[in-house]
Image (cartoon, helix red, strand yellow):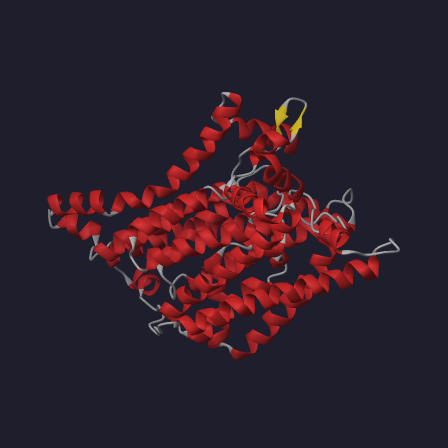
Length: 433
């Protein structure tokens, strides 16, 4: 019971801390005492550095080179462990089509109608933006798998440029480089080159974060809508955007000073853009309705084919632990799926605790909401992969290793070794999803 209790204490404690901080940063002091003064003291980094086009071009090309190196390494893994006598490009590429990748490949080929099982549009559980982008590219390449891989690689590389710009804005270029490195070599980081939506979700989320930080609210709305078209948890971007908006314009302070006209004008002109993510969700729900007549058909399909229902996030974390200690589960399943899920959740919780006083409220807000959204399911599946796009976690890790130099080597080595192990397992259809 330790893990769900620890998670609950951290999550709800941080909800309270962030709420108090938002009021405090708007000039409204609540429960002023030594404890709240310690929690709310602003320890955020102030080192800001502007990035250049030349630096971004270097980051982009370095990311392309990294993905190519990963693909070469994966080819060696396939050659070493395959039972086939011959390995050509097509068979290597097919090794990347594991688990959900089959669904996305069908969507690239023919949309939601391409894959039907027992009269059900099974791929309706997948959000459409990634497959739509890869499908456009496929008109030129005419190879769904290659189109998917190229789309993932390009999205990942552009996303790393946004990640670098975002982190450098508050923490400096050294931290920015480490943040890009850590998210790239995270044990499940190989998914950024797979035939799945991870790289598109990474790009749309980090771009939304960047424009939130720049207070460019129309672009926050556009990128937020695209994030929500990539995965349901893209809707979580509404919360950090709202927190940053309230703090930046000191909205509660404006209410306190009875500036009602100015407040409502500000919300109407700029604040409503924050709700752009709802547009993305509406488009996805309309896809459900247009095909089946049911706006929420995807929920039925998730329950029917994956046994998924919503629950308290602590229950999901408890199930992870129960599966790890269960004698009925094979060691392969435990170490391939449930153990990395639990460890990634624990890493998320620890980085939230460490970053609560030192990092912007919008980052902590997103981590709390994102963690809860992705663990509020009865059957824990793909959660380690979902944590790959917990962008603030990697910025906090990079800031931590910048302050504690020895940590950088440990983080890099552990992430890189596990990256290679889990990628190899994925390529050979192990339960790494």
